[in-house]
Length: 119
Image (cartoon, rainbow, N blue to C red; front, side, top):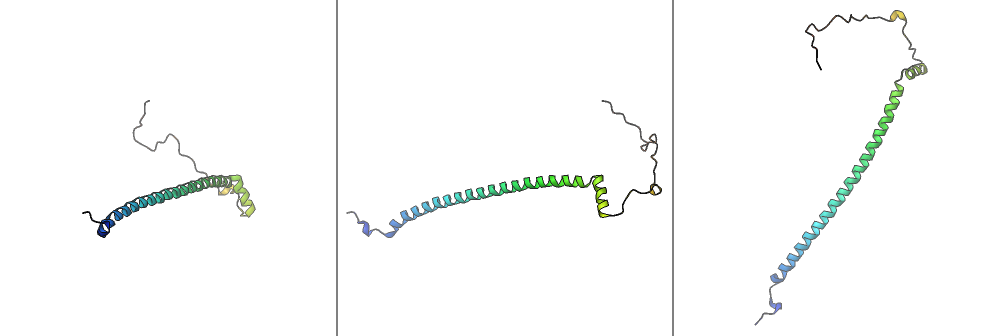
C-alpha cells in the first residue's frame, strides 16, 4: 500500500525547496551584479566625458594664456611697461657698450680632415 504524503519526512520536502531557493538566489545575484556593473560603466562614462570637457577647456585657456604671454613679451610692450612703472631703464650710453669682434671665418676650429658627403 502506498504511503500517505503526510507521513513522509520533512527532508523530502526541504531538498526541492532548497534547490529552488539556491537557483533563484543565483539568478537574482547575477542580475543584481549585472545591473551594478552597468551602472558603474555608465558613471565612468560620465566621468570620462566630464574630464574630456575639462581638458578641452584647459587647452583653450592655455592657448589664450600663451597668446597673452607672447603679447606681453613684445619689445614695445616691455618698453611701455617700463615707462608705466618708472623703473628708469633705458638704452645704455655708448661708453658702456663693449664690442666683440668675430674671429675670421677661415680659421678652422676642427683640425681634422674635412669630410664631403656626396649625394
